[in-house]
Length: 288
Figure (cartoon, rainbow, N blue to C red):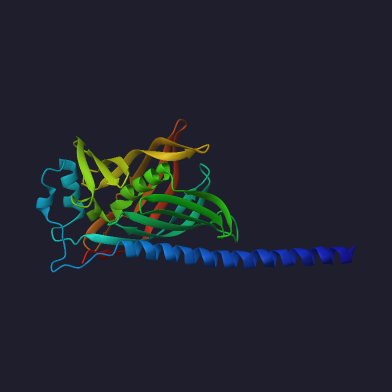
């Protein structure tokens, strides 16, 4: 009996070691793959310099809806340089199942021209083996890849019209963290709704998305709402979706950006939050 237990323990120990080695290798390859994608996006967003870097001027706001003008007055100052890329680190909580919140950390790179982003997150859903998720929108295509420790794939969705739409809408909502991307000439079109709201529309290639932006009394963005594509039993369906932004702002390089945000699906059974994130660090590259 003792010998049998010893053999079982040895086998389990060997299997545990093999799993650990596979996980280490998987995580290393995941990091290399993310780094390659980020270099690809950063390279695609490279722009030529000019004698005078482009900046925000208040006369650019002529003809925009009044709440949008108040927004730019609140978050920018004349002479603000235009963001070419933004690098963001977040911490927060993610709920794959409603109400089951798990801590995450993430690194994200945005490109304004061309439009794109990569979000690389580590979600602590189980001890020792984090779930790694990489969302991206590059060259007009959206994708989502999820793995356990970079080894076992649990989600792999890409190259569909629904993914492109969902990913481009995510980019548009998260442009609140680099607000010069909302300016005229940066691709976003604004149309009036009422005194406190306006619709933002963005077209990239064959994909067009819109969201309704609801502004706070001080001019900042309070929330956004839209119909966003979501996978339902293998089919893409447009469903109500919203994001809310904190009233606490960070002042970074002269721009006011919300410190945190919460994202929810609005389902028949009610509002279902699934993302709560706080900015830990944000850095910008500017159009030269």
